[in-house]
Length: 230
Image (cartoon, rainbow, N blue to C red):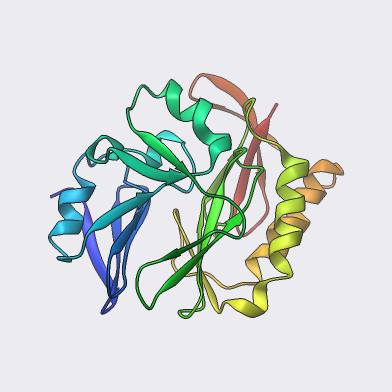
């Protein structure tokens, strides 16, 4: 087994799949997988081993390390702005559109969708309302690498998203990201916002690196690294 299952509380699990993690949240009536892994191709089977409830899938975005088992689902929740990237992956399935303000009720467990465009056009976070936890996908990390290079990234939009999200921090106590440290504190949002703005303003010195055949710039912010276009 190349993945690790960690139970967070009686109705919540995180699955560590190499350098990425995905989550299973259960209510009283159904369960939701948030992302479907990178190396695994059986996230649905993993989830069925943890709960007897009907299982749906939501993708925080369509980057390949979050859709590894999507073919196990005929339909899944995703922001419609991710469709073009998702279709290029060659994976099948019907997208059930979700966006800002939509609520998925698992039965005595309501999950609110929050738009976080910038890392990708349709990146979303999931607010576990009663649990007071934000499941953030990729845009918010601590001691990880945030990919902000490539045609579908937008740093200015990313900063706007973080500013909007910062206003909502009274609604959650901690953040569960898809990469790096787990959990992380809510002040990470402002730190990322300030750091991204410093990059745009030329206040941070970048280091040229090669990644996936691209020449990019790595900006070390002290608590995380942003990888941006050269």
